Length: 242
Image (cartoon, rainbow, N blue to C red; front, side, top):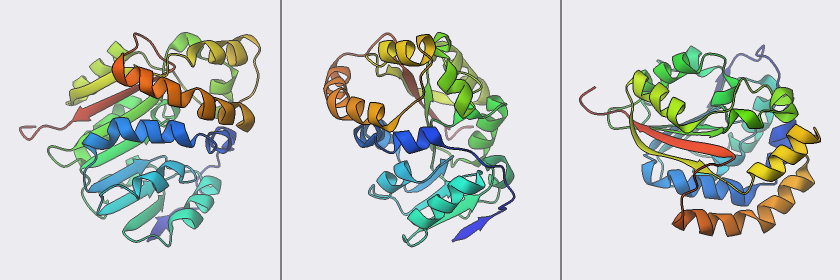
């Protein structure tokens, strides 16, 4: 099923093009969130569907993929429209969160929340639309001092720190069941390439990092949690009593 308003703004998506080469990185993120995935999933800001295609291989019953950018949506639609139990929407989550085809038990934001000016209101929409006992799984760029030309170019309003993000989600009503930094090794190359030398994110950079560094760091960080990281992931639960 496809629904939407194709007059939505366009998003250049060069970062999504580059990140399409980051399959190991996406699988690592999925592994972190997998214990919290339910049967009825919503992915907000699905882009061109790279992460959506990984979600399809989990034990879900339905997936709603939402992408407000009209040019990204065209590719998303082409990638997902023939898959069973998948709906795609060319809208903002704030426009449809009360009229989803199935009340979700999991809502995912993978490198999306930082693009939203009013992230607090967005989290209220997430909390209101979730089933009781459901989870919000959120992955964001971390450490504001790493904010550089790539962040500006792709429309990031902010990078996040652990404690303020936890407090924000708790203020909305979520119980925090998981929260930690991710990809500590990525801090230095990100700072040098994009803050000091002000380079652009390129597919070959992403591909090399994904093939060489990510498999090693995934094993290391599964044993030793890092005090800082280039990214941050958090899982919030909507309790039955709320």
